[in-house]
Length: 464
Image (tube, rainbow, N blue to C red):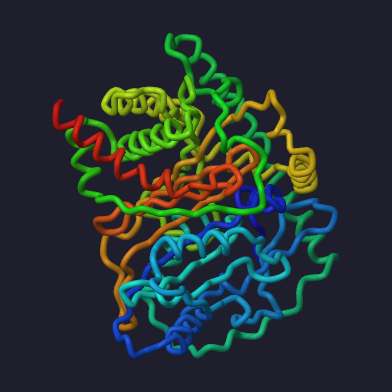
C-alpha cells in the first residue's frame, strides 16, 4: 500500500464530468514483421505490462477524507479489460487518428479499477500501428511516463501474461489507522518548516516586486484578456497534431540567442495569432500561459507520480512582428524564471500535501455545477497551458518494431479549454493540441498554423 502525495492526489480532487484529469500518449509504431498481427502485439504488450506493478494498482480513498488516497494492488485486476482494439477506415490518415484520440479522451476513467487504458489502433497509413495510452494524471506526469516508456521498451520480459495474486482491499479501520500514523509521523512535523519557507519566499517575491519597474506576470492579481477557450468546459474534446523539425527550432534558438522553449512559445503565439485573426478575435493584450516545469533533480528517473511546478509567462499574440514577439516572450519568461527561483520549485508540491481532500473535491464540484467561468465578469488566471517535454534522444527499437513518433496531451481546467503539449523525439518536435470541442470545433486550423508560424519566424530571423 502506497499513499499518494498531495501533488498526485490533487488531480483526483480536481476531476469533474467535464474537467477530466487523464493524459493521452499516442505512440506511432512501425512493425518489424508485418506478418505478426494484432494477437502477437497484444500478447507482447500483456507481458510487458504485467511485469510492471504500477499497472495493477488502483486508488482507494480514505474514509472521511482525513488523508490522501492510497494505491493498492487490485484483487480483481483483469488486464484484458484495459486493452482495446480498433481499426481506422481507409485511408487511415493522421486526421482520422486524431479524431479517434479525441473520442477516447472525452470519457472518464473508472475509479474502481487501475486508472489507465491502452487502445491498439490498426489501419494507420504506411502499414503502421498506433498505441493510445490513456492514464490518469494522478499516476504519472510527462517525465514519469517517459521513464515508464523507456523501461517498457528496453526491458523485454518473459514472465508470462498472468499477474500475481493480490491481497484483498484494505479495511476502513486499516485505512484510518495508517492515515493517522502518517499525519503524526510526517505531516505535523513538516508543516511548520513548510509554512516558514512559504511565507519567507513570498516576502522575498514582494520585496523584489517593489524594486522592479516592469509590469509583472502575476496570475493571482493580473487581469488577462478572455478568449473563446476561457469558458466552462463541455464534455467533448478535440485533438489535433502536427510535427516540426527539432533542428529548425534549434537553429532559431542559436541565431536569436534565446532558449529552445522561447522559440516554442513564440511559434505557438504566432499560430494563435493566425487563429484569432481568422476569427476576427485577436485580443488587445498578451495571453497568460502556464508552463509546467519539472522539479526533479538532474539524473533522477521516475516511473510514476508527479513532481512539477509551474512557470508563468505571457504569449504576445498582439505583436505582429515575429522577432519582436519572440524577444518579448523571452523577457517575460526570464522574469517568470527569476520569480520561480525565489519561490522554489518544490514549494507548491509541499503545500499540496496539506490540501483537505473533501474541501478540494467540494470546491471543484461546485465550480462544475455553477460554472463561474461562464459569468460575464470572469477573468482567467491563465489562458492556456503549454508544455515542452524532452523525450528520448535515441530511436526506440526492439525485435517487435520501432517507435516512429510520440504525441502527448495534457488536461483542461474550468476556464482554460486549450492545452498544447510538445514532445521532442530524436529529431522531431511533435505538437499536440487538446481543446474543448465546443470552444474550438476547428482545432485543426490552429495546428495547421503552427508550421506557418515557424516558417515566418525563420524568414524574419534570416533578416536579423
